[in-house]
Length: 403
Image: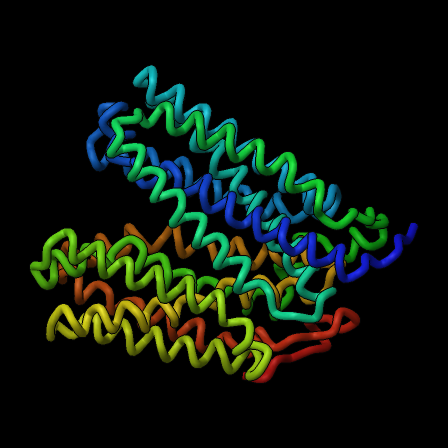
């Protein structure tokens, strides 16, 4: 069965819908993270207990990513996004019930649903975004990821406003769940129609086969390296200013704001750089920017250099993940499976990063602990050649990317 190719106006409409999907995903995910202190208080947990509870989220997210690819391949991105967003909605409702009743197990179940749903939502929206990018012949993935970043900023802002107004975290979770569900029910109707794959196509696009593809694995390493570089800054940059430079919490927040702002701006305008210089050169340039920024942050010289370093670190960490997603989806028939496999490798960084830096910080100090990011940057840099575009007709075995 074939369908007529959508015209440009239709593709532009789908592009907007994908952007809204990324933004809503960021809003749903960050709309409660900013209020983890309130969650901890309502559940009566220690900081260590909260950390264990959050493992329900990260563990479920990592476990669900390999399952998301076959789901997207079989049912299409629109249905997979809807399924994932409904799981996130149920997860937020479970969290709301848990905080209202003071039930840690109920909150844990909510976080499992949230993590599983977010992984499915994430893979599906990236597959749809890559399809639109390919059909329009423009580099759009960085802008879609910038939409996610803007959604997280919006979610954090709403959380801050709710906390300042005395709105309970339970009420906020309920509102976030209902808003996310309402937006996504409408938005996925604008996605491209799904053309079911044949049994033969599914047999050539199996998960176990993608795990044997050198290029797919190397793309996963790109995402692992750059994801670790991004995730460590998200978790530890503000703390490094407070503990390493004895700055105030406000200055720590400003430093984190510099990082997030630079990352968002680089994603908004990074598509032009990719179209001009190509994926590989941009990855190598951003790796250098991240390295210089990191070294400025850990230099111990002073806060002004740290703030400059935060800008360079944010710009350097910005494009690895979106470029990796685009590269994994170069072949539309195998996009869902390859995105899920590469994503499985890449998202491991968000699971391993925070505890690793915490362990090293206890022994060597937070500034010295951040130097482990140099290894992650080197990993992303070494694997960057795998991001070179390939034609859909080519296979990883036929295409050996040059470093």
